[in-house]
Image 1 (cartoon, helix red, strand yellow):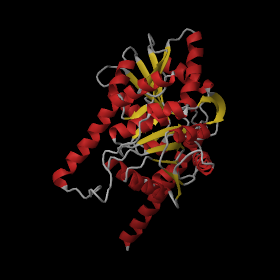
Image 2 (cartoon, rainbow, N blue to C red):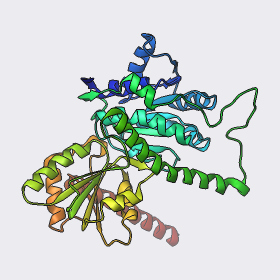
Image 3 (tube, helix red, strand yellow):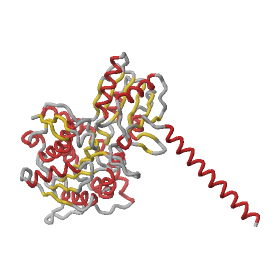
Image 4 (cartoon, one colour):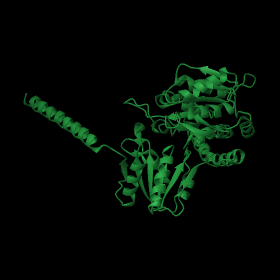
Amino acid sequence: MREQIEGSRAVARAVAAARPHVICAYPISPQTHIVEELSRLVKAEELVSEYVNVESEFAAMSVAIGASATGARAYTATSSQGLLYMVEPIYNAAGMRLPIVMTVANRAIGAPINIWNDHSDAMSQRDSGWLQLYAEDNQEAADLHVQAFRIAEELSVPVMVCMDGFVLTHAFEEVDVPEQARVDTFLPPFRPRQRLDPDEPVTMGAMVGPETFTEVRYLAHQVQLDAVEVIERVADEFAAAFGRETGGLVRPYRTTGAETVVVALGSVLGTLKDAVDDADAAGERIGVLGITSFRPFPYEAVREALAGARRVVVIDRALAPGVGGVVAQDVATALAGTGTDVRCVVAGLGGRPITQGALLGMLDDALAGRLERLSFLDLDEAVVEREIARDRAERHEREERRGRADAVGAAR
């Protein structure tokens, strides 16, 4: 049944419908409301689960690893600096092939401290071996969690479900929260690929030497490749069971016949679609490609969806300093050899609003050929030019002082 509900509560109820055996909770904005709601459900005995209050994010992932390794369906949530604090066990969870599901309420990482939304946190872990699925809206955020448990347990690999912090977590929208009976039918009981059992001892996470480490990493690569088919199939099965299409690899919008296509992840897709609708009304043929699966990156699906485009603009909400946008690099790889022009626009860092007006201005620049290979939406150029000039002047002054000191030393 559809209802007006906060995104965090909708996700918590979807997670609860998946019947996790262990929930590891440590609060950090903007994911706190998710674990708070799960705590309420456990306390009210609406959910039978071991709810573990831990002392840190590192402990949250460590407890999730221990729970999953003993055959329990495990869940946790985090954001930003919390995700960075649990990096070591994040890699361990993937290396041990443990099907943990974790919500990442996307938030910028510092310094400087910033609690608002961008994708820097999850994308910093793009090489960890976790699958990463990005939600466009709160309906998809709730649905992706149900799919994530199914995908994780079929492949025996951990999955992050990424939803934009505050923009989605704290927004009230109409959501059809997955019903318990349907989830029970869609998501079979957890049967672990391997588990710790005193009666049948095994070693998990043992040291591996140079003679086999490459093979271990290759298998981590292969399971990501295998996940492409599984993610797409699970989304189709979810649509058949629940009567709505969410998840999958990519989601095209107005791409048929479009010579210009804008690629993006997450909640900005809604604003972007509105901007494209306005552009279409003005006679411009522009499409949108939403990417749901960032890891594994669906190279073939992206290449196919963008086959008719002459130019592609990627909206990136994370920056690799000195390089550019993170997603744009993968899109460019997918389109290598096609001759398609790929431009990257870094936008919305640290929660800066991405307005429809700014997007329309960006599209005008793209159509007119004025868009640089790498550009920054709504960048205050006066501020950065002033700071660059000051920094260079200070470096020049330090070099001059060093030169004078060297000259005095040589004279002595």
